[in-house]
Structure formats: structure tokens, C-alpha cells
Image (cartoon, rainbow, N blue to C red; front, top):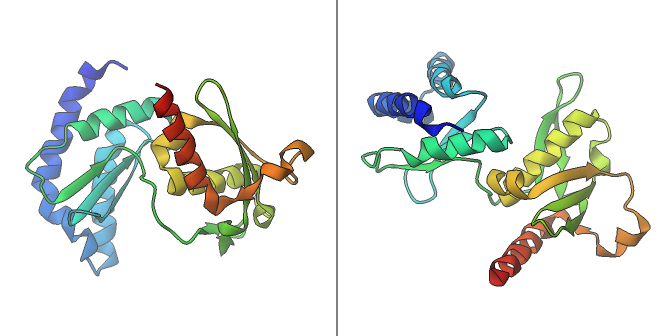
Length: 215
């Protein structure tokens, strides 16, 4: 990625963000749908200048506000996302900035829409997983998720990807989980090492810690 060519655009984005900050923080306060829709459209227009990124404004964990820029699971966009966030102005003291969706504590329940655009809840905590570790410091993940069989393959993978973003964070998802498969049944040789999806975070963190000790 030729970073130099993005600097003028990044500089322009943050100047716009500073000018719009008072309006942006009203995202949490706007009661009128038209006002929120207008604000969302304005932020969308600025973010999409960089490509197919997503974004989110939410309360921060340490500061009042958080702005998350998501590369939508793409490794090349992640590099640009990190560059953009690295140049966030220091004067924005009330904000936390993230270059990808962070891991979070959650209830392992997803909301998705089926083929008839009916919203449905998926209890992801019922899933089982098998995590296979490879010598190139990547993983293969097998997921057994019987309660998403009503979805097409693409939607199933999207649901699993959303769960991974929530569990390990989008950046780790991009960097480490090179192969993810949804299976009806685990192969016999893996059945004894399968575990509930709630255990994946701790399992993943333990392996990363081991890798770091070996460096």
C-alpha cells in the first residue's frame, strides 16, 4: 500500500471530523430519525472515500465516545484503517479510536434476518468449535452450529465471522483465522477436542501467549 497518497485524504477526514464533532456526538442524543439518518449519511460519505469500510460510534470504555473504523474483514483495508486511526488528532480527548472492531463481552446471541426479512435470534452459545493450530501462526476453525442451518452458506459464514469479531476482535480474526468451516459433525479424530464456543477466547489467548514466549 502506497501510504503517501492517502495522507492528504486522511488529513482532510480528520479536519472534517473536528469540525463536525459537536454534531457527531449528537448521534447519541438525536431523537428524530431524520436527524440520525442525515448524520449517518454524512459520516458514511466521508468514510467511503477510503473504500468499503464500515464504522460505528458508541460509548467508549475509558472515554465518553468511541469511533470504530472497520475494514470489513479485509487485510489490505486493515492496513489503511490502522493508518487512518494512527493519525487521529490528539485534541479529540473525549474519543477512543479503533482501526477494527474490538472484542467485547456479550451474551452470544446474534440477531439476523432470514430469507423473508424476519428478524431472528441465534443462540451462538450453543455452538461447538475445534481450533487447529498451524506452524505458520494461523488457525483453522471448525464450527458446529446446528441452529443456523436455515441460512444459506454465505449467511452462515457471515454469522460465524460476526461471532469471531466479537470473541477475538476483528484484527485477530483477519490475521489468524485463515480458514473457517461450518460442519454438520466433527471428524472422529477431533470430537474429543471440541468445546463450547464460550471457551474459544480463553483458548485463543493461551495459544497467543505461548507463541509470544517462544519469540
